[in-house]
Length: 311
Image (tube, rainbow, N blue to C red):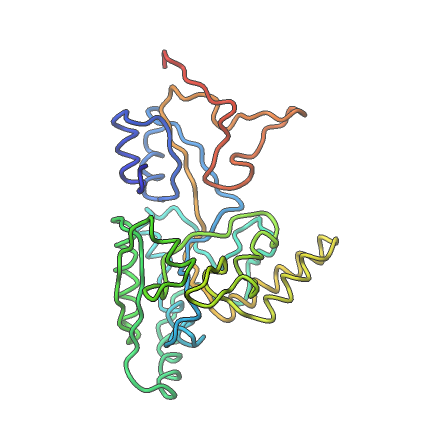
């Protein structure tokens, strides 16, 4: 198994593999410049959000919305995209990407960097909780993710917050969040693709938020009555307009409390050798073409793939 996109890119170009999918924007940008040598299909709708997943059960400053929102305000999202994603991603204002049920252009969250606003929130918090603020940020082992971590460390240092960075092997990353291990405070994350808000139910409803040490699909241990009620209402109504309204309530509440810190919306690319044919061409019985990966970004249909030995 190849764990990171940079290595997969080298493997494709050396002929060791014929196809792979990636959400690493810098890698996608690289293959955009080689369309004849390595054709690529891109997926940019109904995608995940790149964000910071915070464990709300961990004692300390991250339990306070003022600190979470200050960390969020301090981030220069466009600079992050320019420096680590070759400038090709879109700044995110929340965990609902464009096209998803519940997406709002204005959900009450301003993604622009606001250092003064962040410092004011930190000062307000420290007036009640004197002392230095230190946070722990975890990321997988890759050069791009390490660069993201260093940028965050710089942004947060500017508002008086010290950041400890830990690189976590990919095979431990999800398990650590699932069980809320002592080392899991907040991780760089990517999740929440889908069509309707119900696909996010088990990620955000308090019924899936087992305390640290227990198995929780609600990795962030979000427990919010407004979010719970809106998710429950969306699940029970048959009216699409009502469901959309409830989904928007979830979006607004998540943004207000800064339960997670969004960066950008994911872009997926599937570069491949020219000899791989039929990608993105799965035809349904009515003659229409199916959405790649059954609508879940980063996947592709294999039924119509074939190899042209002469290509």
